[in-house]
Length: 300
Ligand SMILES: NC(=O)c1ccc[n+]([C@@H]2O[C@H](COP(=O)([O-])OP(=O)(O)OC[C@H]3O[C@@H](n4cnc5c(N)ncnc54)[C@H](O)[C@@H]3O)[C@@H](O)[C@H]2O)c1
Image (tube, rainbow, N blue to C red; front, top):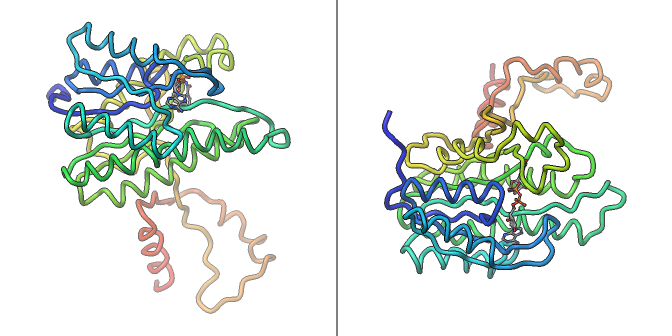
């Protein structure tokens, strides 16, 4: 197995001024990538902002002999996204890798959630990923090469107080899956990372357990997904404390009422065990996979 190199590659890492993003930027730069270190600065709730976080990471990369430029735009606007990609193209001529990582929390139980809390979180996680990735996709398509990583969360499994965040993160799974479909012919791979790590975002929530969860233990999975060596697309991976695992959205065999049948709610009730049965599931890689599975079932 050869070493994974990023020589000649250009990477954008959003929210790379601290936490997980900083580790990705440092690792990719140490392996030869030229890196755009994007970070607006600001608090864990997305308030305020200063340039020191991104600049410090750039200084750290340069001190180790790597190549990086800072970018201080917010990912939360179309102009910010375009400007981040422009920074990569103006500084390094192209973009090969986008790690959509920036974000913050506005946790509230569902009935206390304000529309400001909803908009802010959808903007910084979900819409931001569109704003940064669409202009990057255009450059990658032209070059016939690209790697996208979208940052979801185990909040997609459901987490009290995180309706806004879990919805935004699940939206990123759909975005990544469709970019994987649209990018396939242009050499563009797209995957989702679901990290669990001790950062300022989580250290209070996780308590002592956080000590198992150094952010550097997430980095190898992200580095692999960002690399030329990566062979997977349309995937989602949990990375936590040195355990790396596939997460998937599967489709079970289910119960088929039969051709021409007129099933009722009572029939559904009666067959619920078959509907719920998980054995024999498939993991569709596009809507076509479900249509193929259905047509096989209907014509058997
Ligand atoms: N730490 C975990 O266990 C965990 C779990 C699941 C998901 N995540 C996700 O991982 C990503 C990184 O989180 P982290 O734990 O490293 O937190 P963090 O707060 O250390 O890092 C997030 C970074 O994003 C930056 N940022 C915020 N808003 C921005 C904006 N509008 N434009 C540009 N940059 C902005 C912040 O300044 C910060 O440096 C986030 O998307 C988070 O939701 C983290």
